[in-house]
Image 1 (cartoon, helix red, strand yellow):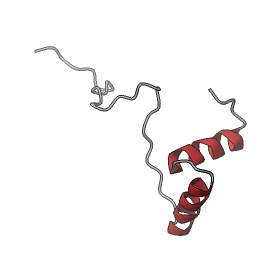
Image 2: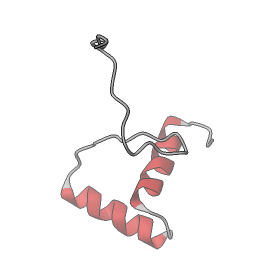
Image 3: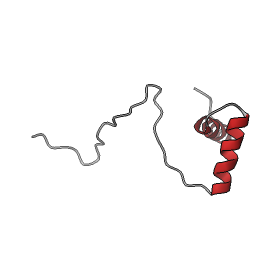
Length: 63
């Protein structure tokens, strides 16, 4: 059996085709509700709203 490297991560079963990775973030419940409401008002998913907000906050170009 081959030895695995200590820092090597096993492949995830749900690899996305668009290159996005999961990230768990803890937020206050009122912020989560505000995100959901704003996303719905903009006809977006919550993750899309958050991604766009973070891009703006970090002044990143949308890819």
